Image 1 (cartoon, rainbow, N blue to C red):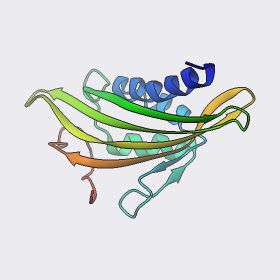
Image 2: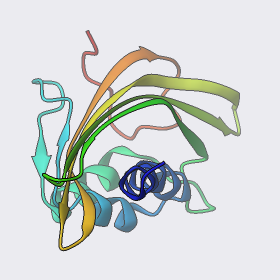
Image 3: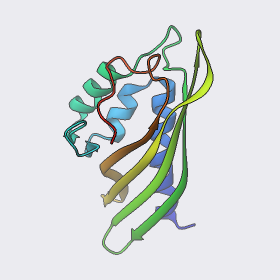
Length: 151
């Protein structure tokens, strides 16, 4: 694996780690330079650290332990990296598991990420994260606001 592939993989895993820890500040830092959303009318693309922080605080429920009691798993990672240009794209599949009182451990959401990255000052960063929702389970214990159309 190249140094760039490791750095990009760490960004993708870092997102999952931050959201599962309830660290919305960390999520906002990771996505500060990115356009994020599904890109459709249900979840338009948002940009900027403040928008990212507001988005996660207003949509994702945190419990007494400060976390959403979730586990985000990202798999099937496909990377296309142009080291000379300092650009990359990835596609991956994600699954969110949750267990809280009244909801035994179960998958609640699954979909795909389409990410774009750029290298600036020697560091890779997200410049776009599109998430597409494929299947939805019981998200009533996870989301603070109803999920928009997914088809």
